[in-house]
Figure (cartoon, rainbow, N blue to C red):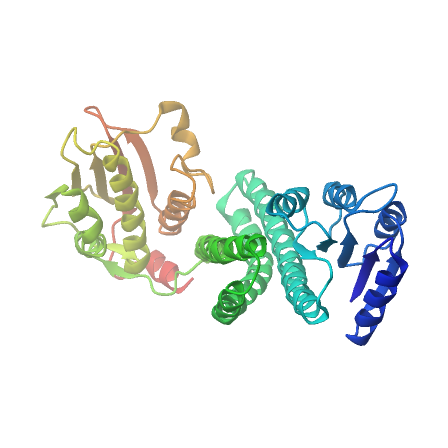
Length: 417
């Protein structure tokens, strides 16, 4: 390690220089504060300084202040050495930006120990800085890529062209996400060891350094948790995009829409029970089958139920949440309506709710893909899905699907496509 030694007493300077060389360091010596400042400014790889307080021209205290106010991107550990021994002097040194404080005459063994502690702190700060830079860069790139691709999705004219775009987006986002996730997991596995080491060293560390260690112990777990949550959110978006772009029709078969409603309610039971919502089923027992993929249709219903629950939750305490399912049919179609008594959708936003990434929910609560995916699924079934505000408040979604016609050539082709 390169160590700056700023000392106006030549004998003391030589003694410190000899000890540093003995301990394996590379000392860079100066006899006044101004030369020391010029040296630190020119050589950014100097990571530690042994600085005498009382020097001609620029004293040690002012030198420390200049170093702290400079735009150094690398850590610099300062041990201030002085004959001043009063507590107020030590406090003055720490307030100026010194990391450690030694009173003359200096005990070589104590100095060596303090240099070792400082070296460990410098190395920890360097590693944290490098990891933070890498993670910040990766997150920024992810955000830029997600924003860019989101704009592309929002301007896609039709589902077919949107599917091509989303497949590429999912692939491009997944690679850096895997990199971030892997590094974050490695950091989380290593953190307990680092944490124990820092805690054990903190007991024998000066108060100022203990505060720094305490800050590291507090903030790093929060940073790791934030990274993990961000990766999970990105993964959820990727999975949604894959579902959105995939054309999965090989499992089309006769489907009982009433049974899809029952199964979706089972999946969302805890969410509705938490709201103490009233669920009303007005299901036509003579409802004919539609032809499609039951799992995908249940996915649509789950999305609608979750959205309804979020909307009704905003009215908790004012009215009891109420969710109504109604099925009916005509000669050509089966129809399902899902009506809630939530806050509704502003009329000017109704045309936008089908756009990918559009959401009116709080940040972090939704991906904005649920309704877009649902629309894609219904269109794959040759059906339609519409939304409107109910007359008595809330929102009504209406799904219309073709009836299944046994032995129909068209249905066989749809099931095989």
